[in-house]
Length: 520
Image (cartoon, rainbow, N blue to C red; front, side, top):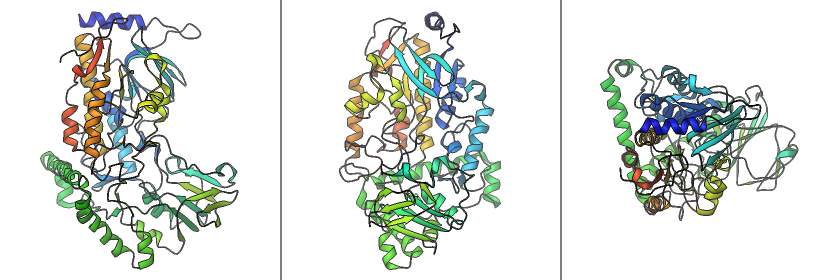
């Protein structure tokens, strides 16, 4: 029964043509992106014996954010044993915190080991995708041709599209401008006058790396971040040997780190306690690193611990106290042909501007390209009702669409890879349910989304990420926090262990009526 229904759906969708009379390739699952999310979905689909899928990648290699972010000093601030798939662990990390190159190499190796690469269409940037209500499929346009798919997985995440400052004059600047995620390694910084805008997670890594090389650096700081020392240790000696030779030891270390980080969730949900436990350590690190009282005051954060991302570095404070660095507080007001004007009204000439301004976390560009039922884009849907999803994955009006690292899946206390793997499981369980039951489509019910998000917003109240008390990049223009997951990772893992089809409207064949509340 199941194979007959799905064969009928596939046969009906494969007859479409494009300009020139060539058949439009059809797959059951189309995945946008080949970062940790996309690769993970592909591997788990193969393990579930679902091989009719394609990954659409705009670049020429896999790797996602770890492919794109090649800026000097790029590294992970989560222990490497935890920043991997649980089913594909790695033992030969050079240290307990992986470098960018190690993480990129890991993803490339995993894609090859599990046979993912042959499913990838490189240099295929997705330009748009529309849901076909009659045929129950997604029509997808890429820079190299069209595809159709029963299920569409958006694995673009929230760290793929740079956020640029809304400041006048950038077009007039005669020097070099680059975002940290689009680093130009051909541009020689040696002896240059450089301006860095931003003091977040990227800047805290590339500033110490380039500071010895530049002639002078103007560091524009709106708010000073909370910074903890980074306990970097090489994986050598008995410890390194045990990691490579005893899987049980590696599993213990991974589990200890995973569950230990849940304690941070407990602390961050109680800001006063976090201030005493975590904030005190960060301020001790600041006091030890910055002897000048006046400068130390300028580098002391003016917001609650973890309201914005907690950073880890041993070389940030030494770098920004160097003689060739000037710290400039406040907003920048405009960019001129030769430099930047700060909030003090002074123009400072520079040769290059480096943007450490983060990404469009609460305004996903992919949302404008996805058109659901009734011709409404995901961007329009979210603009009207807020950026919400069920289990961070599904949205009413967008059947068979699954978002990886969608709303309220960002972590402020643990490894993002854990959330990715939980969502991977949810997506693949959904596909297995579709195949087992012979379904044409699944669409989450609005009531399920509202109930799910009501719990999230309730859990945010009183935490370090409460939008009523914390203004950060986690918060959108309406004052909501559609970014953070305000609970333990294990809670999210439990909720995504199985596909809760009872929360969805389903259709059993192309063109059929949808039915609600199908019981699992």
